Amino acid sequence: MIYRAHFVVPITGEPIEGGEVIVRNGQIEAVGTGLAAGAPGERIEDLGHAAILPGLVNAHTHLDYTILRGLLDDEPFFAWIRRLTELASHLRPEDFLVSARLGALQLIRSGVTAIGDSTLSGAAVEAAAEAGLRGIVYQETFGPDPAADYTDQVEALADQVDNLRGQAGDRISIGVSPHSVYTASDPLLRLVARLAWDEGLPVALHAAETRAELDFIESATGEIAAFHSLVGFEPTPRAKSPVAYLHDTGILGEKTTLAHCVHVSEADLDILAEENACVAHCPKSNAKLGVGTAPLDRIIGRGIAAGIGTDSAASDNSLDMFEEMRFAVLGQRAARRDVQALDAKTVLELATLGGAAALGLETEIGSLEAGKRADLVAVDLSAPSTFPCPDPYSALVYSCSAADVLLTVIEGEEVYRSGEFRRVDSKETLRQAAMLAASL
Image 1 (cartoon, rainbow, N blue to C red):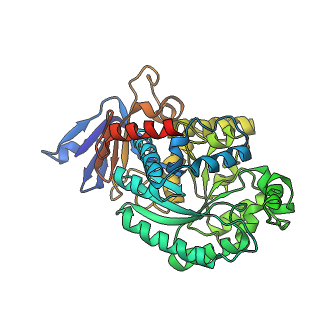
Image 2: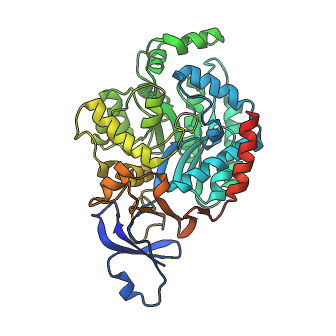
Image 3: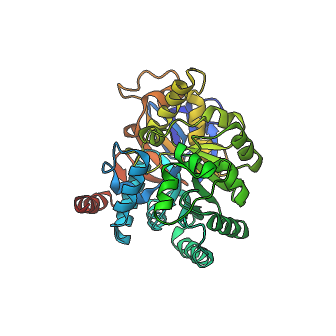
């Protein structure tokens, strides 16, 4: 198959006008112009005034919570997270699966081909595998009691990982996620770190998301500390930042992705760079919950691998990575009061190759290069909202949305084309989701 379009955007090279991509056996064989002449008889798919680019990588999301879209809007962070926990407690395993399937549909529809998903129920593994997505699904674990023995819980977590591997298929890897420094105590973090190192498991955590998190770790003050005391857990002041505290537990490393990193210091960035840890930047969720703007310009300036994530539909309702890229650029420029803080080319790199690097998949996906997996997306540039487009980076980041995606291909397989989902019964998923939403 040869895909042809007005622009091909390889990410690792300049955009190619009148570009072509040859796909064979799930891999990219060649990228360039005039390739059809050397491949007589090969089927050609001319996508017209469109851009072909690598599949987008959603570096941090929660498919489990898609069904909670619109139920938690306009709440401050800790009221939001308590309400989220309450609503999630009413969901049965089959409900989580419906929710995760709904989220997977939206991601594929919006050009996402790979994910870093943190799951409470494990349903995201089945939903992602069904939809044909690639990436890592991290099994979450919680344990805020600093006096508890979590040995049995972590042994059970290891069993969960083994069970999920059996559902994951070839494109999904399983990792672990001790949720955060305020929901996973020191003994739990250390045990999970040991498990991850022993088994070579990738790790994801929420880190430095709110100012209250810093107060909790640094001085055992603020609303998180008050809540812990209320339920009988006495917090210990650490006199250090959440990132430095995580470093002490041994959980940081090249297979560790920290979501958010809104409140990080230069010393924190030194630690992340030293440990080769990765960051998933979630600008819309952070803004909507009023927690701040991460210093993305400084994070990438340190050479720290960084990707873009939407977080869940419970906080970032649309899950549209085009919106996320646009918001990332505009948010950095507004926060830094500097038009050069971030540009369209850089943020598209973060949403593709950067996200792939954050998931440890940069040698397989994230750019259009011969030998890589054929994970690619075609985006229409002919609509009034995107035309004219002399610069594809500008059009993709500042003008396009999920509605402009024509085609989503994962490992050479067309999983979405012009409103049609090739693997998943979207009508049945929406019917089930409507019933579940009504019950909520």
